[in-house]
Image (cartoon, rainbow, N blue to C red; front, side, top):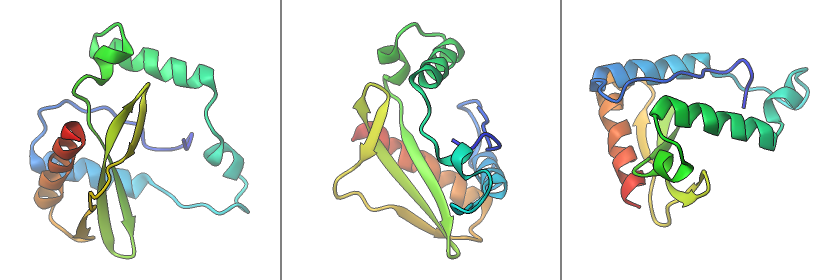
Length: 134
């Protein structure tokens, strides 16, 4: 995880436009670095068990739950990628123990880079629904 990355939490009741605005903000904050970049090792390294545990504890506290089972119950996960003028929205399914995996046979939702905030913001919850039901 990029230490200079975009780490934000939002309420679950955002409008489609608000979701689209925040997704674009994340794209604007993202960066691509190569192995020659001086920060490569900081960005690419695998988090330690202690770091994962701290994230889980923080997320459980934010959600008001005590167990990982409760934290991930009904959870969904999508990744957004902007590349070559296209936004790909990829839902993944919960595998257990805080891990996510691809959904066999599930195609990414692909939108043009300059799609409206509202259309982008409608596509993300749709992909989250796919993730939750997989």
